[in-house]
Image: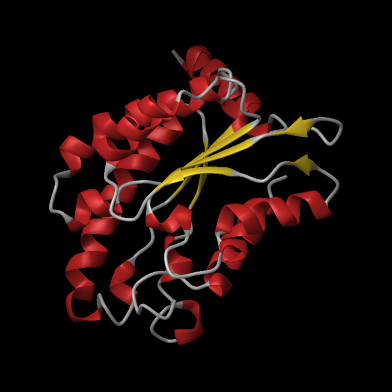
Length: 218
């Protein structure tokens, strides 16, 4: 039993250490999500996928302008429907997934979220040609630390933690990279410049912090 555990740990370590992309290839990037990925209330160049591409290209990679499939208000089921209709090929060099805040906001249960998130993660792997090392998940931000969410901050934070626990556990089961940006978003009330003008979504400055966190892993 101990040997089996060591083998599983070794296999997971190989997946975790695998280089996501190479500097001698042209990489296409697909970003899947909701308002946080499409960058509600910020300019296009301030969206975190766009900022991430800029940072990685500055490090010597060659990544094309990201294709973003995301819309404000989407739940996991909305994203699945959009992906199904998009006619995507399984050839993307990098695929990101950030989804779930609207499941929480619309009072959907964590239990109903789990299989839908897992289905989207499996689809993301498929779209990356089955190459798990080219897929990554971003945690759900905590909008309780915005002027909009502050009145119900404790309730929101507790719920966001539960959804993130679920998506993180599923992500780890598949050996996929997971970037926890939630604590960064919890600086929104003490640092107002990190919140967009709509008093709800992250600002370009906040998205820059996400991009920098992810870029360090490449």
